[in-house]
Length: 325
Image 1 (cartoon, rainbow, N blue to C red):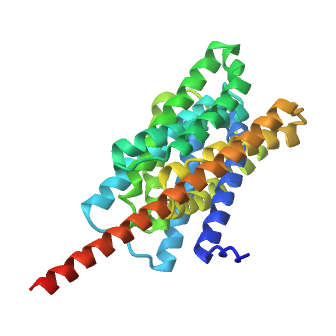
Image 2: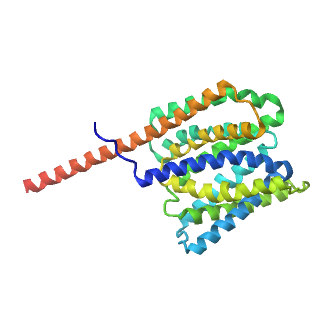
């Protein structure tokens, strides 16, 4: 029986990066919930992204990283600073005043479905049917398990609507960024976006939260520190690195794994019981993610084979043309 090929170092790095993003952002939901208890949401988000942006750009200057060149890259960074960071995270921070961290993470798991719908429209690339089916099954299981949580109060309904709006905007941004940040260093690109987003969020805090005052308790400072170091500095850099090596709908499957981590951490830290149905839903999600990744890999291999066939046919035609001359 022939030995199966070993994954390359790039593949192993992508797998580790994928797992790191899931673990970090799965934990960030709980940290955001802690922060907004004592600090107005827009102010908390603005402070987080300001510190994170400064740290990332300082690291980039130390490494003497090449800055983006051309209007295309800078225009993309400017657009993404609002559409993937400032507005979505402003909505998420605000929503977690009324929606639990687990529920917020679960609602955000709709992102892969939106990305799968936008990918053929924006990139003219076909998403494998099996991948779309797996995403629908996974998200359907989560919705069926948690849909009653939004009907508890009107603020919770508004919070859920805000999260869904953030889902649509950030999903559009993932597809938009795929071919526009290929030449931009992840460290520079993330740092610039975070600084621009922090400026927008500080303006929002000044307009909408002028009458609220922040109380920086020990727990809120620790939660903010985790968000700065891991949730922003580490995770965003890894995310953009992965975006250059994976299809958008594949990378968006992190939004299906993240709710599982958020629920498990809520159970661990708040001693919440996990019903058997929840365990079944988690297994379904993980299996679905694996199906999406396998479908994407199969599609990539098929494209390679077809491209090889096209090249061979072109060579044969050229060879025949030379023979006839």
